[in-house]
Length: 362
Ligand SMILES: O=C(O)CCC(=O)C(=O)O
Ligand SMILES: [Fe+2]
Image 1 (cartoon, rainbow, N blue to C red):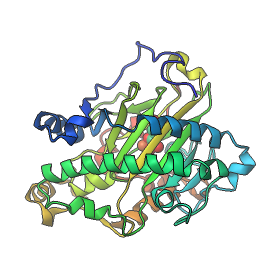
Image 2: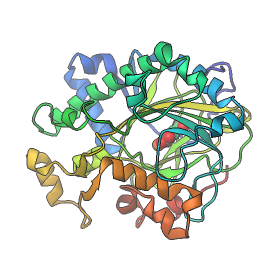
Image 3: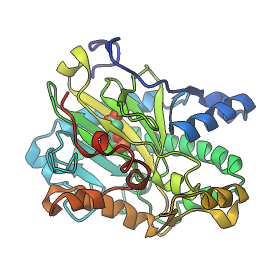
């Protein structure tokens, strides 16, 4: 597998987002200044680099697993397709989901492996996977999942304290006693693409722990009309806040809009892979602001937009709706795409309709 240094370099003439670099080792030690930096990153942009996370080797092995699995024949991969009913786990073929309001097809394929399947292996909770996944479950996938859970849960414990929530309150929403939507993902973009890979979106869940070797990921900073690349840095993860955490915190933590474009400059000639881990709440957790548990959140609810932060939807319903409405088979018109949206709907759409509604050409 090509690493950051063996493909073309990230060009220096494209605009990049100034993400803060957070040192996970310092966060774990409870370093006050580093926790303050993390808080700024999570509340202002909702994206940050994370270094010293300790998952570097497992991530490298996940890139190999992803390349091998997505290198299988299409007919083999299609046996594991997630389908059109809103299920997240399994294989997603290219061209099956909308990247914008016009229903423009995506050009990426990906594989999602449920946290619950990795933890209960060899007994499936949700589903089965290709042989290339099965053979790497014990040595690669389950260790990656466990370590990623540990990182995300550590960050969540920091946010819980900062939000003035009782100890364990956010952890409770993610307890492994009930199945959840958490998953590991490998995305593959073919070389020499000119259209959007993954359309503008916010992540469905709580925290995303992402690993990139080539560029292509872009964020739309608050109040900006310009998409900025996130430059991959060796052994640095990119973390971001998802909708569930934005909703629990009544918008104090920011679920920022982002998308995947073809890699910039000479990097576009290479296949692009990304590896991510999405922490999501237990299936039955209702997505609403935790105002009754924290004065800080109650105050934020008082200042909230009219739609508020009471979705009336469980985490499982929220994820399933968003996936179902993105699948082109289910598309009835522009309203299907609007119905696929999460917090980006009220937070962004009215203020910046054009940069979000239509997908771009590289
Ligand atoms: O591939 C990437 O860099 C990011 C992918 C992403 O945003 C997602 O899968 O939600
Ligand atoms: Fe995302």
